[in-house]
Amino acid sequence: MPIVRAADAVLHEMHGARFTSYAAPARGSTELCAWRLDLPGGAAGMPHTVSREEILFVLSGSLQVTFEPGKGPKAAQAGRGDVIVVPAGSTISVGNPGAEPAAAWVTTSAGLTATLPGGATVTPPWVR
Image 1 (cartoon, rainbow, N blue to C red):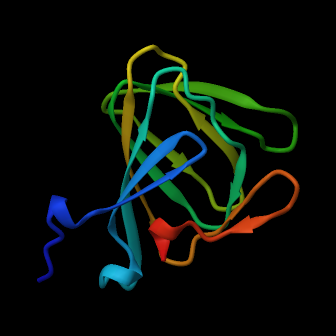
Image 2 (cartoon, helix red, strand yellow):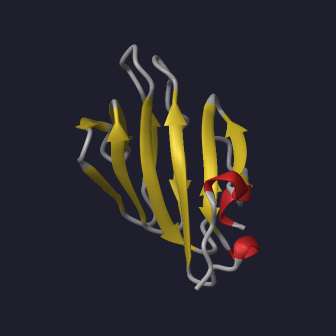
């Protein structure tokens, strides 16, 4: 059974957020990807449309998630211990409106892509 040591996790930074990748195909996982998302206080979310379902478990702080399901944005706060379920095909942004840092554990399936405003499609390095 593989164990990914904290020292072996891979850090990525994008849009003012830090993604610490633990499980991904590049590190031996064939079906799932998992990472820690860290957002500084006051971080605005970047809207993006996900190709796969994502689960965010809030570890600390508070996250503001905005879903844009076609009829306009719908925002909600999620605090420590809360889980955000993001359906495949959803356009979302995840930000931290508070002053303190916030963190979440994120899990999705391998192969996730994100479409950014303007139509660019990105395969984040933490899911490869």
